[in-house]
Image (cartoon, rainbow, N blue to C red; front, side, top):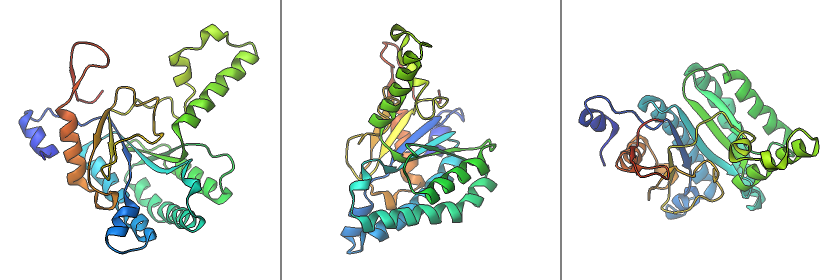
Length: 254
């Protein structure tokens, strides 16, 4: 696959990467199973892939990177696996937060924080507070996140406004609902990547992905690296983005 440097050369140096890339990080368990390793090792290697991908996104010039770290449905997994995942999250924040801050990365969290472990909640808040004024890559972590649940929360907020008499039912528009999502100031993702070969969104950014380009790669998440990211961006660049219209708009930063 063509890499980003080759694309820059082909476009006379004018190539701009997608502004917002979102990734469904899939395949940790299957990566481990193929090697006869426990699933926990797949998740540990997946954290290493997160580190590589954050660095690669910064190098390439992506402005926003959203990663699907833990879904609201993942709580149905075996308790031991959930403990491993929460332990990895704790270690990632404690060990990597200073480096992210020093590299001007701003960390943001989307998802439902009600009823999560108080320690996890404090760590997530600490990550946002420490990096909140940084102006580099925005790393958006979808934790305890489900898109249907996010849309339902937005609808509930609008319903409260109607009940309070501040909004008429006829005033509920797509724009108003979008303004009540978890991170309404962020642009919709230009590109959504899913690893492991699976081809579905799995309740991830359903509202925001209405006109996103979807690229599914066979690589399991622990093996994902800068080359794989650049390959997905190269595929994105080959798409014609019409946004429901007739005139094509090329896959440049929006």
